[in-house]
Image (tube, rainbow, N blue to C red; front, side):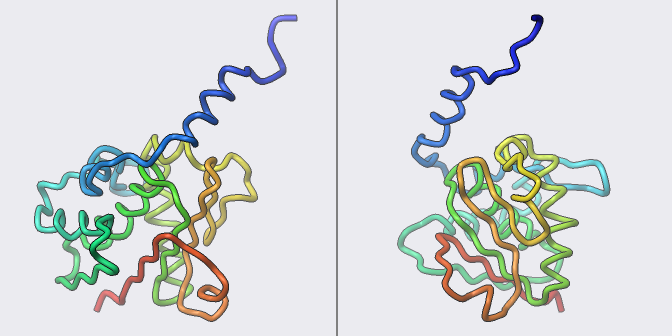
Length: 178
C-alpha cells in the first residue's frame, strides 16, 4: 500500500485550530494591503496598492472602529470606492475577522455581475481567501458564499427576502455608478 486514503489527524487539528484563533487586530487598510489581489482583466491580478488611493485609507479603517455605527462615503466615479470599501472589507472579513456579511447591490443583475466578475476573480487571485472557501460545490454559487470556518457571504439586492429574518455582523450597501 503506497498511500494513505484516510485524513491526517495533525492536518485536521491545524485546520480546526485556525478557526479558533481570535480575530487579527490590524487596521482594515493593512489587512486589505496584505491579503487582497485586485483583478486586472481575465487572468491577471495585482496586490492592492494603497498609495494609488491614499484618501481611501481613513474611510476604510473606520469600517472596524466601534465608535461608528455606519460609514457613508460619497466620491467621484472610478476612484477605488467599491474596491476598497466593499471588496476590501469582504477580504478583510474573510481572512482577519470571519463573520457573516451581506453585500447589497442595487439590482439582481448588478449583484450577479459583481459576484461573477469582481468577487470571483478577487477570490481566485487572493491565496488567503481562496484557501478559506468551502470545498463543497453546493456552498458557493453566484449569490451565496460559504467558508470553511462557517461564515457566510450573501450578495443580494434590495428585496424583502434578502433583508428578512437574517443576522449579519457586516452589511454593505452600494449605489448606482451615475
